[in-house]
Image (tube, rainbow, N blue to C red; front, side, top):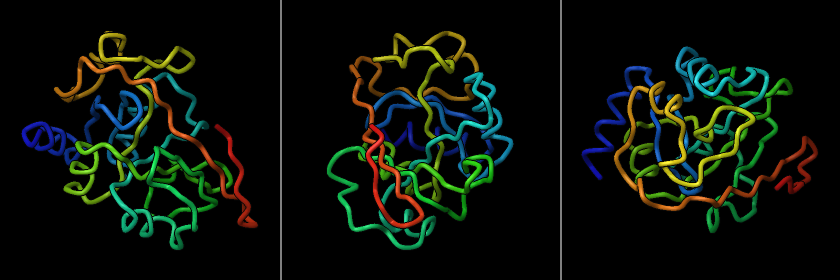
Length: 180
């Protein structure tokens, strides 16, 4: 695993894109602060740039640096993506028009170690062309996606991955709504 962390880290630090397993599904990702790298993710996925992407952090400390106060809800016992009303430290093209940002504390050991070593959030978007079904395992990821990224993490290629995260939204007034 350490070798894969080192290789993925090298790519992220150079502004590249990776195809990697997360705690939910296979994702394509990059440095969540690098505008050019994020633009490349939108192109890889053929996704409209007005649709925001999720960012992953390794722990509550990284989350707090992005959003300030962490809400008093369970965000670590199961994969839970939260749309926060505002965030700092992420590139502007990860924010929705209203300034909100979707962020998840990742549960996967590889992702946690990679993001901790990287020291900042990374983008996570399902490894599919927008509008197509999300792949349930590595073999279902299209050749188009695989050939478009700068590095493919060589872990968990045989695992079935079908658990999408819960998605919650925190409104300006602090109310929480479950989306998925």
